[in-house]
Amino acid sequence: LIIAYESTADEMRSILVNAANDALLQTVLKLSEPQLGQVYKKLQDWSKGSEGVSDDIVRLRCHSFWSLSARLSKDTKSIFLSSLTLALPDAVELLNTAVSI
Image (tube, rainbow, N blue to C red; front, side, top):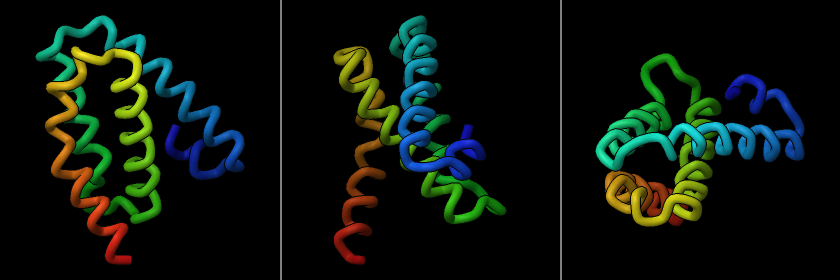
């Protein structure tokens, strides 16, 4: 998905992200709150990249992660809130970085 996302026009990127979010939302709805927390943490770690992952890919992953976070927040409400607290420090860091640019 990330490779397809990177190589498509802006209109298609939105469609790809929405389709991925739909699929992940269907999976998340089958999870318990503790399971959701574990999956969400793994997605958060994935979004930060790892050694050998280009900055462009990390930006795409970050966008995908926060897009999914917004969707989960909207569609799952209370079950997601405890998981969202895991990402708040990263959100603050990203916002501080954006302000300093």
